[in-house]
Length: 513
Image (cartoon, rainbow, N blue to C red; front, side, top):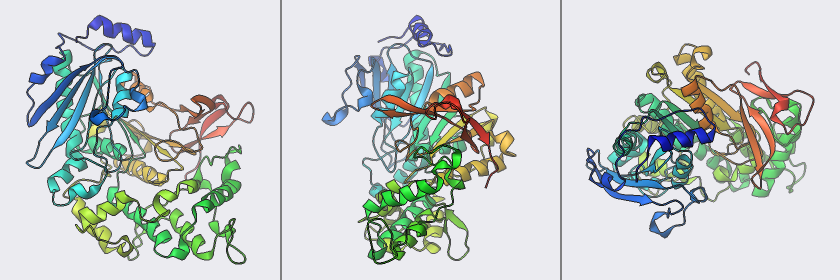
């Protein structure tokens, strides 16, 4: 199948967006890509997929995002940059209406699989797109045991190799390289994007990094800290039905601090709430917390610190996140992502017990081991990326139940210091906190927004985002809109008009706490 420049131009103009015309030359047929030679790689399949004809491999149903996809050329390849590498990638190429851009899409957790949902969304927007399984299959970290090269692939190499090879496939198919390249990912996908900016600043022009797991070794430590707080002593386990009790008490204390009582805490960092107010006065009960349960809740909110040096290891979860606490503290086992890291990467012992975690020696060991594999992506030096005009849009839900939102704030502040201050850094990186949103999606807030479009406008039109309108959807209908504001600004109600309309809110800069 071939793409013509006229078809591309017509598709762009029909969309009503900024006209961005790709330089499409003589296009190759989809089938001819099977003969494409790539270094340290083998193209394993090439398929011209008809409109609406995509079926996920292995007999699995396609994700909802893939329903009714336009026609595209689907290329699968295996990359072997090391003797123990086995990196699977897929590159999807619009058969018509290519927007001239390339998009790499991220993964979550240890997940070793192609992200068909994200590929579908990118394809539907006219992108040529690529995804990788990061060099292994499945969602466990067990693959790393005895396979250091595969851990390097997971840490950074698979995404970079995918990006380099995918662009070659794009060039071969369209007869032209992509004019702009973007990365889009959340959680581990957010970490992958930041790693690209830090280590390979020429790979992408713009990066969407949602709720990034970029301080991986300290993040998994905090996850096990919560498990220790709630599971090590059965008396400290907080029954799941009490999460809502704690959440309602937090809302009662802090919901209205932004001038609107709407079931969402706009800025939890300004909320002073102590679960001790729920301490049972006599015995136990469904609407109160025992003393050990109060102590456990306080630890979930608290910054994890090295017990010897008192240095911060990782910030605690934010006030407002309580209904999601089961993920880290609900038991009977800790979060497998964190447990697997210490079992298979740090101690190389599948029988290791999370209850023995030493916040001094074990975390130091984890950091030392990581220097060989590059799982962390917390280097604040983005000077090379900024020098190329690269842009990063970070976002993080305040109610994130897996990764503390304060981690993103910490990284932003470190980048600001490295780039010469907040004013200079704002030309390269901006962070948008999302009140009420859980990990990457969902929650009580306005969790539906278009970061990709905002990033395109920033990179291509030099229009930095000053507010991004987000929606709360119910039955696919927007029932509330609010502006997301670049940190440290927050949305403030004007005092008139509907509190469900973003037009009645302004972004205000408040003094940092």
